Image 1 (cartoon, rainbow, N blue to C red):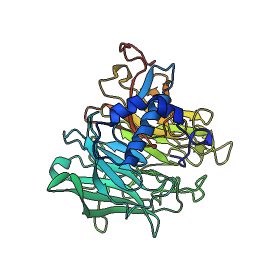
Image 2: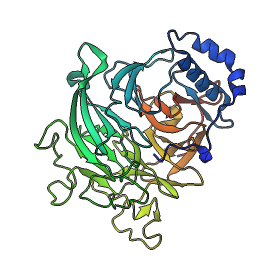
Image 3: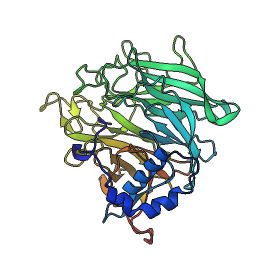
Length: 428
């Protein structure tokens, strides 16, 4: 993700007229929410006013608030625990995880974990990742990625839940798994996920900043920055609090960090596994001109900072592409400025999107469906152009897709025409 910025560099303003026009709707919706502060009420009114007044036109899809009574503080992710509890967990960048029941009528979200006292929250720093252990129902383990200070570093930590209240984590249970020093304030990556087949923890780390990867981290196999890591958190290999999977590409390679699974990444902002193909999809935020999507394979070099997308970066022409894995898709900064990775859709609510990779742009708010099978020509379709600051996508236990807006709301896709039959086809 690039710096927290808005479309065309301007502040997004919800005009007072929009709020006034939607006042009967917002009042009717919000009156059901009891015991909320006036500030919370105002925040929700503004959020709903934005939604009703800024809906785009002439697209096959629209975005709508999934939880109209909930507003979050700079959310950057939404997750489920895989425990059939029907709960969702929202990651707030300042350092809080909220939990709530997955229902449109939910009026409150509780605090699952509050580590604001440990999190360095500024710019692209903060609480950035969450993953529940595949055996969460029996071991109560979950993992977070956050940036801490003095010295500035990425922290991967494990927590457990409160045994008397499953909706609260035990803050004192923190066990540091891995720490990585960070040279600058941007390009932190932050996504965590367990591999669907191997059970290993995958970690996304950006090149550490500033611009252009001045320290050469992404191509340096002796550092963890600019990489996708893969570690085994189920066994420790002292002095490490984890072990290196024997199938990691640089296992037992002298001088290389053996945690590395793939490298040559600038700022991988959100990755996900497709639970049908097991492909690992990564969106890598570009520098000056190109945003890209990669399918991550073990040991591959994805080019940064030799290349930006399919184009030479350093040097600006005539670069050596030998051994580099090129993106499966890219778009220029005439289209968007900061890609946000999503998910291959495997839900049932929008069947024509099945098998499409749904992703967006943080700054410009577009949401696309990308069809790629490695054989046929790649096809990209614009689903909707929104006014959201899209920080993340997520799925629930039914594989339905959610969109996280940095302004505080959680959205979902729906048909533009509520009476539209489910016959809109995505080209493939």
